[in-house]
Image 1 (cartoon, rainbow, N blue to C red):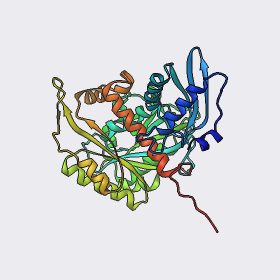
Image 2 (image 1 turned 90 degrees about the horizontal axis):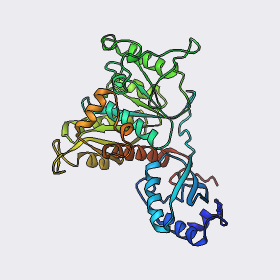
Image 3 (image 1 turned 60 degrees about the vertical axis):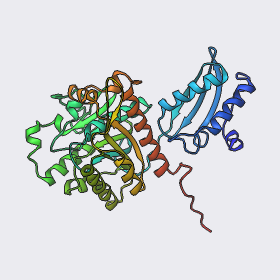
Image 4 (image 1 turned 30 degrees about the horizontal axis):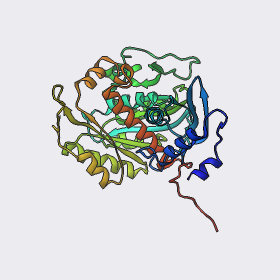
Length: 368
């Protein structure tokens, strides 16, 4: 492992002691986590170490955002070498699916088999989680019949503009570029459209928006597995999908249907997010599993996919969504924010490991 790593990286030996380099190499060589199952060194490139103002800075490039985990690693390395350690990272995120939509590298669909499981709330917080982890993100509200993204972003009543009279300029909330039918028509008009009209409207929103350069575009899909969902899944060049569920049996059954829909249209499912997994008592911290326990993990195993994370039934999440704020923006290291950031890292990592040709898990095709 280390011999291969040294061959593709350079180190500033004059600035960092050999002892510290050796200790750091040994630590990183054995470090494993959910997003680094084969180790960080396996996927890191262009790594250097320098001393800057009595701080040891590790510079490297990685293929997906993971600021939160690198912060944790830096704290462990600080304790190991008894010097302040920090990472200076460049993320080289590449498209895993070819398409002709300018500015967007990867499109990730957030879906649910039924309504009421917190799909839109999770989509918004996933987008903000990816931003907090170090990348550029947009969100597209595909829920034509009941657009809720404008409210959740604090942009209700806002109207987009156009610089050239042809493409719509997306609105922005805390560095998140956003587009929704809710910015163009009021809720009452949006709910009475027929399926073909809704599909055409969504296609226009996607293709006629002047998106900035985005590493990921999160698409908040309408709930269900009907014609409109199938049409959108087929029309949009989605790289992968994330399915939202709760532990309740009826929600799990619909989540299974949702994964079957994506399988039908040959769209990879990156994993499952279990929302409302438990309620944590504010006084004693006890977890109460109000809607059941272990359902998300069970169906993930049955579908041969991953459980990307579990989220609590927390009044703060509901309050933030209603008032157009976000726990990640209010306190990026708070308990709820860290849960969303961990899920965001898992989503980005799975997109890389499952679908990126640079991934060490990608099979090599040898022609003899």
